[in-house]
Image (spheres, rainbow, N blue to C red):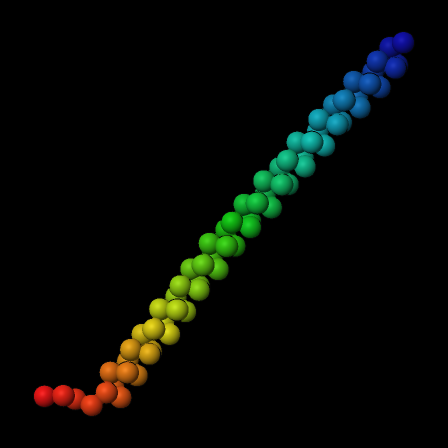
Length: 67
């Protein structure tokens, strides 16, 4: 009888460990996703700002000077 109880306890502990490992992996994947999105957002904003500055510089140099 003890062997059956020991096996049930072992399987229950193994199941809990597996759930904790799966939860940890899920949290890690979500963290990596959000960090990646933040980094991509920073790069996108920087590129947009650069394009807008270039356009403003081109427009100001192409516009005739009015006095």
